[in-house]
Structure formats: structure tokens, C-alpha cells
Length: 122
Ligand SMILES: [Zn+2]
Image 1 (cartoon, rainbow, N blue to C red):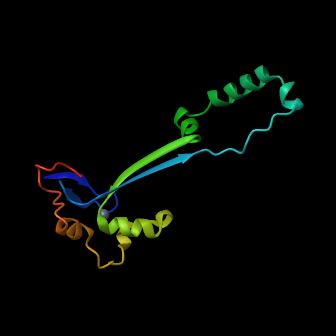
Image 2 (tube, rainbow, N blue to C red):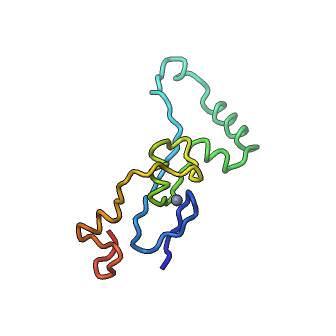
């Protein structure tokens, strides 16, 4: 039974087959806010109204994504190796160097047969 698909290469991943889950959070990062006298006496109401007016003409999705955007994907073992080697330049069609280690076979040799329905998912 196919329950997942590799988001890198599109390969079908059967139930119990080793896969890797990638979760990426892209968040706006700010330096520590320093508040001085100038900030305390500033007209905050006028500033807020100005910001609201600026946002009124923008796409709500664009505003949200300027603060936070999350991504999640599943990868097959081949794409996982390529991904961790170069996450910012991940191109699944380039493939990954064979590591010579079959982690799925290794886990099965330890008795962790992930396809056994009586054990549930690991
Ligand atoms: Zn893949």
C-alpha cells in the first residue's frame, strides 16, 4: 500500500518503508528592541494608522509570508542524502552519492521490521 510520495523525486513510498520528514520554518528575525526617550514620546497612534494604511493595499498572504512561512515534505532515502548534503541547493534529479549504507536493511536486521502491522509505526 502506498501511503506517501517522495516530495523530491516523486517516488511512491509504501507503508513501513523508510522515509524522512523535513520541516522548515522560515521566520522573520529581529534584533533586540531598544527603547529610548524618542520612542517613548513618539506618536504611536499615527504610526499604527500609517502601517495599517500601508497593509490595506497589500496581499494578506504576502504580509503573512513576510513574517512566517512553513514547509513540510517527505523524502525517500536517496533524496534525503542529497538534501542533507546541500539543503539550499537540493535538486532531487541530481541524485545522491550512494553511501553504501542501507539504513532500512540495517533496521530490519535489528528486528525492527517496520512493515509488521502488529508493531505499528515506528
Ligand atoms: Zn526521492
